[in-house]
Image 1 (cartoon, helix red, strand yellow):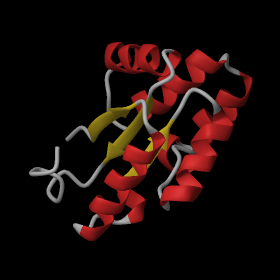
Image 2 (image 1 turned 60 degrees about the horizontal axis):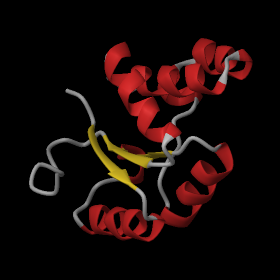
Image 3 (image 1 turned 90 degrees about the horizontal axis):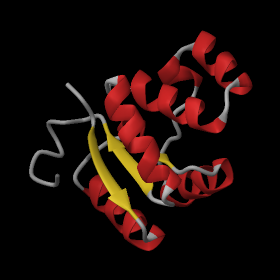
Length: 115
């Protein structure tokens, strides 16, 4: 099953939603943030106690390959590796290009009502 995705323009709202997810019992391992900028992604992950999409999710081979990819390719690969088609990943990457931040939740059972 594909992760649940929410899109944000406001970092504060994202932080509130991650806090709400944690109160619902969603584990940190099931919550991922992704922004176009690596620094913003890391900062949001640290501030919300969420994860980034890294080698654990994409596999070592793809993680190493992403080092040499253009930013758009890297983002699409990360999104694709957590469960979306290449077309869906391209659409999400466009949203990231627009400055949006994406929140992915892989525990679908606990977030049915939230999403």
